[in-house]
Structure formats: C-alpha cells, structure tokens
Image (tube, rainbow, N blue to C red; front, top):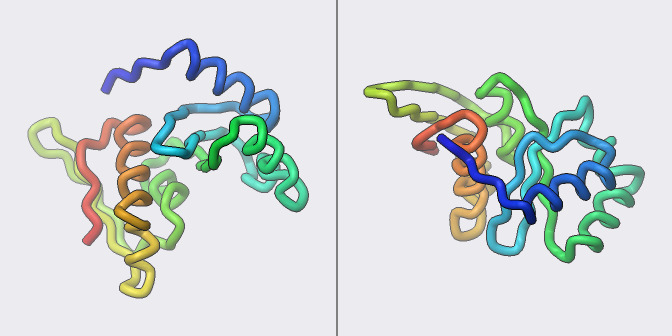
Length: 139
C-alpha cells in the first residue's frame, strides 16, 4: 500500500518528534485523534512523568493523542495497538490478500472493538499502513 503524507502531516510528525523526543514511524488523523506510531524502548518515555509530556503535546495540538509502540513483528505490533491481550493471532495470505485473525477473552471484546468500532478500526488502519494488511477479523 502506498501512503501519501502531506506537508502538514510532515510538520505534525516533526513537531511531535521534537516534543516527545522520539522517532515517528507513522502518523494519521482519525476523527478528533492524532495517532502516532513511534520507535521507543518504553512508551513511558514518550508520556513523561505523571503524563506531563503527553499532556503538553495534547495541549499544543488541541486533539486527543494516541501513541503506539512500533515493532517490526506483526503479532507484537498488533498487541501494541490493541488495549487488551490477544488470545490468538493468525496471519494468512491468499491471492495476495493479507488477513489478520485475532481473538481476545470474551470479557475484553468490547474494549477491543471500542465505542462505535473505533478501536478495531484504528488498529485495522494501522496494520494496513504499516504492514499492508487488507483485513482484520476479531473472532
């Protein structure tokens, strides 16, 4: 999948990198949220003590900020973009179409889906952008 990044997106990424002191791998805006995929050892470095750094960033951009830790391994990245542990993970590729099938504990399913499907939609968008996944199925 070819990703086009606008000049405005590049400026947003550069400012976030400067404020968060990290490297942005990918970024996209969804509704009222800015979603950043970053390279870092620990997300707490990006968030800062008592959330100070991320709150300053949030205030500067005037939007909710979501930060996801990048991993070159698709399973680990999927675990990083969902707020609940995965029970199962399967990646299949048929006729050039990549599909990720995941399951979570029943008690965690609503968290994995999110309000109006927002969490799973964002996870799908990130997996598509970073790994070229065509479909994410929550079983």
